Length: 102
Image (cartoon, rainbow, N blue to C red; front, side, top):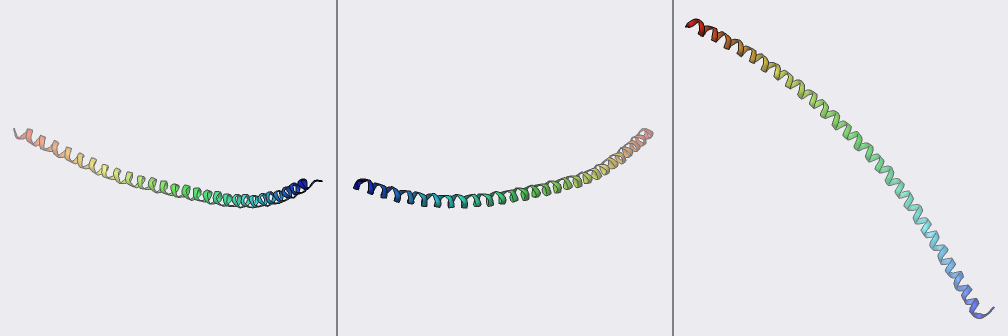
């Protein structure tokens, strides 16, 4: 072999070692990235479940409030109808009294 070929081979050997070290480093980074990604996905899933549960509780509370308000409104309407009926009876009585007074 010539002297030029020996130096070229040594240079390639060093470059191969550097590339292998770089590959090993990148594989470690990739593994760490995958682990972090998995943790983040699991945390995200937990947050989604908590958010869904929170929203379901809010919806249940709103439905209960709506039901309570509806019952209250129905009671008030019953009182208004009763007052209206009493008022109509009183107006009718007064009109009869007025007719008989002529």
